[in-house]
Image 1: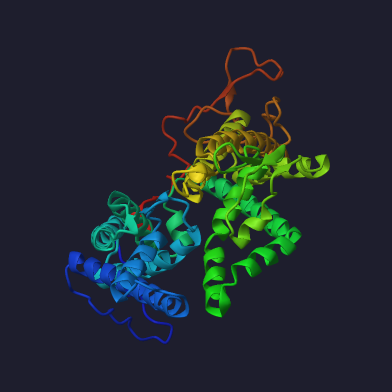
Image 2: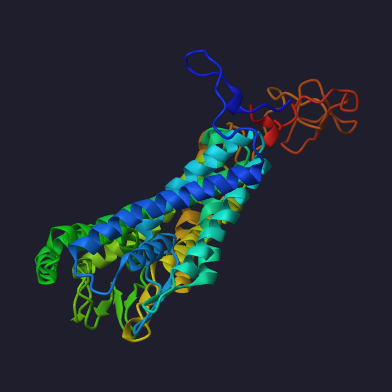
Length: 472
């Protein structure tokens, strides 16, 4: 019988207490959790907007405008674009702000799963949907109420983006409440788990390289960073809010740096490019973080540095292929290479999606194209990481096979005098009779048969059962 880890006892020996809200219908629990997440996020952002409203000139902006601005910022935190009057569509949004609603939705998913008493993964999926539907409904309502003559959030994007964010975050939080990650990963097939592990390893290397590259570029242009910051004269409160906005764009900068190391680079305006082969940029907005970009026409980086940066995707692919081969060795050389290339394809798809979210237009004018090209990043990353992962997985699998293979391997059959037969199969074995009337000396091509193959019981135990029912 399947039981849930939620019904285990506490470390002090007492029974686990039921969370508040237990016994209510799942739809009610999901609506309560969605309202709590939206209300908490709005309360935090209203406080920040009020602080900025009091510290900066706000002629013509009353309390209603403050609340609408807070609602728009909340939608931006959920990665919902908007149309700015006189400028156009704004889609280049800070990915760092998604961490706030994502963390709150994670906690909401855990609470709903515990309160509903879910014990199976399909019940976790139902709990995630119960949170995502009312959360997306609230987002649509805020997008409609928050529209003004200055900014108009996108209603369709509010419905889709908020539903997907809530579904993913609440689903992961609910799954973690059901069982530890190690136990949940054991429900996946071994090969799928190894591919995900290899892809995660390759992406982790690229994220580390992108963060180091972005930080080094910004450190090399600290003088320009300080000049832009002083020219803005934001004041104490404005400087804090400006710093918060720049921290929110850090994930975008890391993804841009990754696309730079891949080769295609990124754009900051129509007809511009920033790539290892060189860069050509126009006038940039007065945002201190953009000081890390090379201004105007800039030649290619030194050849040695360019070679090191362009080699990083192959290093990431090799690391992913090594993890793949170590976690689940393949039975054939070409099989290991195929699954290694699958790691690269999966990593390319993930990077293409991240590149799409990390960029976007900043109006309908010259800055309508900002960020990396998703399809270019996906194709190049899939090829570079996939080839490196395939070669490394094949070599690592072959070396592992060579290290663990018996002395008779490598095309030579084992010695019949020392081999043992496997019950239930025709195999090499002591006491078996060779085919044919003449018992000539073994030349390496004699087939020995097991005369008890029909009556011998199976010696190989059945594979362990996998599935949600294996959870404690």
